[in-house]
Length: 266
Ligand code: ATP
Ligand code: MG
Image (cartoon, rainbow, N blue to C red; front, side, top):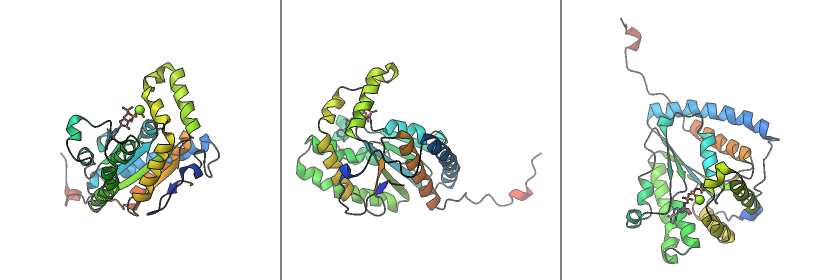
């Protein structure tokens, strides 16, 4: 599937990656069938992950506004056991969060063993919005790429698999989605006029994303750039990668108590 997995140090030009790509998938119906299979398989694998209590999975989602982070979470997690999943949305840091290092609030939200954790935005905001708006001096954010790599390596070494997805939409698609929010009463609440100021900085954001992908894609935790103009394709690609990743962990149910075969229940 034409999702781009960034190689360590690889320079990325987002304008060369087609957000409309749908690979070999011909239409929404075909994608729907495959997605349903993935969701079912994910539920089985999550059950073992939870029972075994040995590995954790962290899914990081980043995108421009209206890029589809919320929709992705709703779709791909629709079949899993809610007890084994935790979603954390990272907003503008609070006073308390700002009085700590930038990874403090992030580390606390990393899923425990047995759990799947989803980050709706993440520590990458600290080299994206923070860089675009000069919220800290350049010397500070420049150091963060290395801090992030070290942090993620700690997680991987601690049996937390890190899956990072960038939902790649075009500027035109964002416009369509903003207009849809304005036109539909049940979507109006999602429209934040402040998002237009960020849209005006589109090119700066693209440059910040490209640097993050280049600098923070070690082989153990690369960025995956997912063509996301078509929601059905985005959901399929991401669910597929999650299933493959969980399969790769070779999960096993823990050994049952001994002597269970002799148990009699009156
Ligand atoms: P939606 O996409 O559905 O609108 P959202 O994730 O944009 O949801 P909002 O409350 O609208 O949620 O926005 C969160 C804001 O917080 C974003 O503008 C994001 O850039 C900002 N933010 C997140 N982390 C940081 C950070 N470390 N420093 C500064 N701003 C941050
Ligand atoms: Mg927003």
